[in-house]
Image (cartoon, rainbow, N blue to C red; front, side):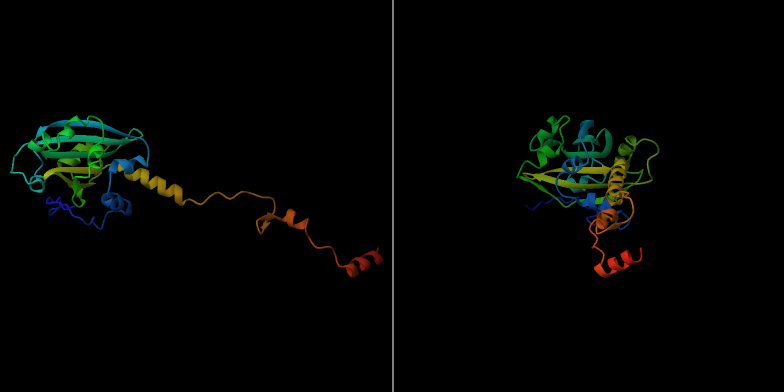
Length: 231
């Protein structure tokens, strides 16, 4: 299904930056529901941090086809896995669409937005685009609040525009350091060699030597006769 909205601009790009890790490139370009992908890591909970009529960010107006300083409906949430914040997400829709085509977004409460986006065949999605966020970007500041201790110099995020009956809804998702730590830990666990069992003496074809000795061939008759004569 074609879509007339595009989430890309000079900073948000379809191809992830070369400096991103393999895990980052993977998660920044994964299609489908991010919530569903997070559920493969543990129990996911949604915490709403803001729902309000507000102004879109400076890098959102063009992608949504809005005039500068046009009000919009904004929803911000944190997605946690097993109680640990993994993603800070920000969605924005034109104000008229939020009481029309996208009015269901106002009634989500703590349900994930994915329940609306991936259960409706009339919803189309733009390409995913990504970028590195620094402290100058408002989403960085929202995400940094959820990070325990000092936040890193930069975070990575992705965004795309969903279109339903001609009305756009932009979703931006910032991945937090805890997600990358979890993925790195899982990768280390899966690549670690399995511990070897300790056996008495060495093995031959997977069996202890005591076992193979019990099946040894009998001594040749000539050798046995010679041994008896020498006793």
